[in-house]
Image (tube, rainbow, N blue to C red):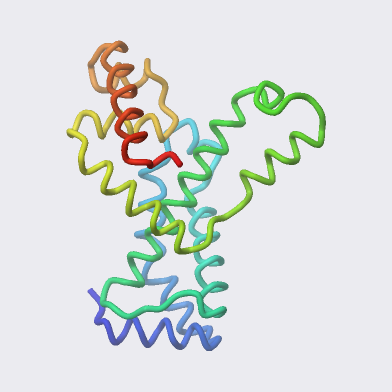
Length: 195
């Protein structure tokens, strides 16, 4: 583990444009972030998305916003937590994008090139850092309220697994998966997570 002082110094040097400090940050966290992204990709999505591409995007976002003064590194784990939250957000966004791509876009947006462009614009938008962090915190709190099997079902659904694949993997019935998903939807509405 690296000291608060070291992490803060590296972040401040990188904010000032120090390429060596930026390289040290990348070297320190690259493998951990790639593994984190990889764990959240289903095998189907992983065939389309390289976790290293996600992490490159994470670092581009991080360094751009760090230099713009949007991040403050104060506590010992702030740098690591921030990079992990950005990674989770970008990975889930890729999963959502590739799941949406399996459907016929005309069914969701009507026909026409303009509607498809509007949908792509919505998918391409990134929330500001505070919104992303708040969402990840809410999601972690919400997942903490679920039992281990419910959590596994939800995580597999978010990773793009079908009910059949989940049932086979967890050795449960499709009906149980549907009940859990309905229960989770109800909980999410009560918590205001989907808003």
